[in-house]
Length: 257
Image (cartoon, rainbow, N blue to C red; front, side, top):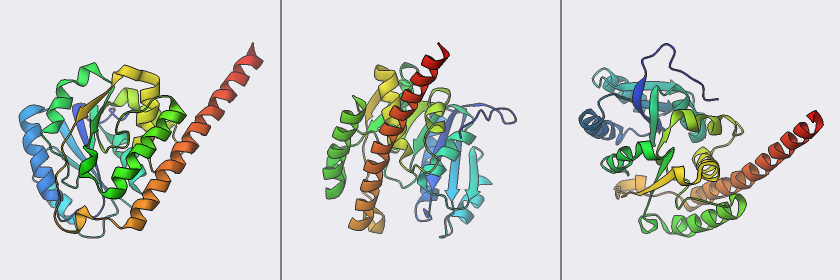
């Protein structure tokens, strides 16, 4: 559950949350890049990395870097999955605004600036990736997921599952809190619920994707299919969970009256 955590730690304007698992090849370069642009553009910020049980030496790199980078906070935990790492990062964030971004080096730190300039106009700003930059399965799957989301929720952003987003912590926290704890697809679910409830207060911003070299660009077909099925399953579960909750509240209100 995401709570108010500004009691003992100094509040910040921005927290950059990075859920991290086995990113030893590129995590140092990514953190130095983000530190450089945030030192110049934001000043009052923190970089919060949730090390979700990495086994490749990522933890040692992070411990070394946090002695050097003044704004870096590192949380080490046992591997609990991407969704729970995102939740914990948002729970522990001290910033009024949270930028969530994956640390794999695919996202341009400069694209954040366009979002940051619009932060007071929206509760949530989602990056919108060029579908052509994804793999063949991703290109085929994203339109299916978006259409299903639109059918189930009545509206849907262009790229609701994107792991590059800026949002107000106080407004987004209740959406994280009411998701079933086992849900992995927290990005998708929170974006759809906020779009449904806040409409035009959910903005979108085109972003670029970098091509990565080596194995990080590739993912097995089986793994991609498994992730896709999880997204679709949890999307349907969320819709019916919300419908059940709404019905229960209506019954309670009727019985009280």
